[in-house]
Image (cartoon, rainbow, N blue to C red; front, side, top):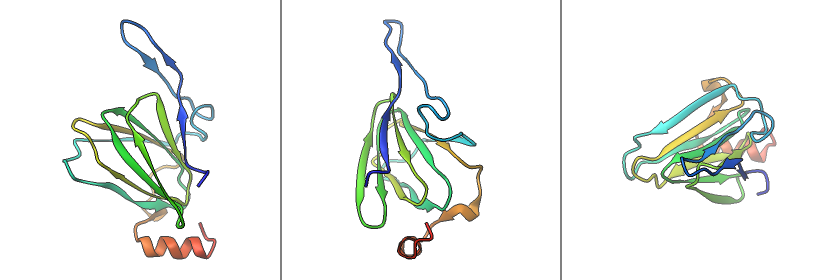
Length: 136
């Protein structure tokens, strides 16, 4: 699985507080069309559990930590996000789950498309079938 990857973002260290940033098509490998964030996730709860037909994502742990499990239908890889200067790029056609949220964690997510419920694949068996048929 070489398509999902951690990308280190620029960081400026300063005794007054550190600064990091991300830009379209530079650090984030697509044009951002949507931004959203996950917060107040209760202990033991999971998020995600779906794939996108067209949407690419870039995920940053702004605060706290969590795991992102990315699955290409054959192999799963877990990324532990706990630094705000790393982002996880997830291409379209990958199943993703988010687990193990720490207290007060904040996940910032950028997407390459506007929200479209028809872009979601929410059934894992359907995801595997679409992968097998080369449709995603």
